Image (cartoon, rainbow, N blue to C red; front, side, top):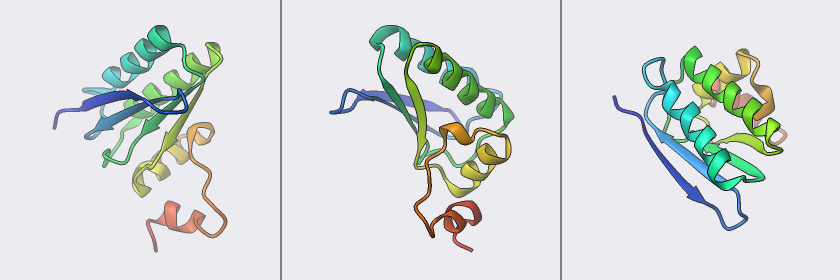
Length: 117
C-alpha cells in the first residue's frame, strides 16, 4: 500500500499533516521529510499529525514521529498526534511516544487503549 500524505493549514495557523496508509520502514522517511519541510517552510507553532487514516505503524514510523517531535521542539513548535487508531495509539504508547499522544478524556482511556473492549 502506498502512503499518501496531505498537508494543510488550519484556521488557527497550525499545520495538519494527514498520512493515509500504513506507516512502515518502506515509507516512514516520507513522513519525517514532510515534517521537516513543514517546519522549514511555514515555521508553525503547532503541527497536528492526523492518523485517522493510518491502520498500522511499525517501529520505523514511530522513529519518524519521534524525530519529527524532536525537530519541532528544536524549532519552538509542538507536534501532536490526533485521531490515532486504537492499535496505533497503543503501539506509540508502548514505544514511549506519550508526549505526542492525545490525552484521553476521563473514562475514555480504556476505550482508546483497548479498542473499546
